[in-house]
Length: 248
Image 1: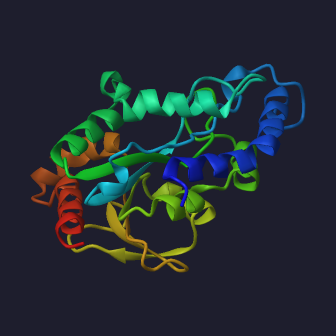
Image 2: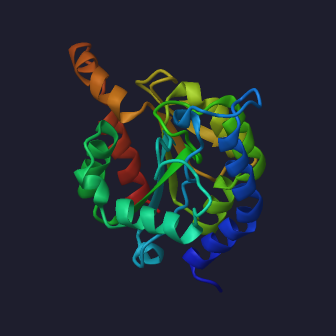
């Protein structure tokens, strides 16, 4: 059987030729089909993931999702290559380049990873191709991603995570449905469904998943919940991970 990273590479290679043409063409035109002079709207490089050598032996494997990949190695260009994109993921995530990155998202996950040394965490994004600026990509780019690079379920099938954690907030539920599948929400005691909920995928009910807010918002509401004597969301996330780790 092929190694996991080889299986991921085969997946990306199967999409690359067509995807490359689509992204180069997209960056030449705007949403209305006119010449694109605004590089901030250009499609960036797709988020291609890989795992380290410890991954197959980890007691628990957790795939965590952010929203979109802002300015990921700048706009997609003629000489963009799979090897260089995978090298970027390796340098930034597997070799912990993110530890020098000043953002609430990565500060949060550094603490999470440090707390659970027996867990293999691996990073993904719900929208795998972002724009060359911050925020949700344009509708046209999301549509092109869905049509030509709808690979998240393939990545899940290859890597077989024990748990999915979506730090994407309720407004991105539409993209979970588009890129992974329809789901039902199961409320968790002590939280409204927007804050923290379990996701039950209709076609993959054994795929365990939870959704909460982006870490920046989790930090913002932490003190408010403390004043209201409500359970901390991060504490609940830790509880979910511990349950997964010790009851597999």
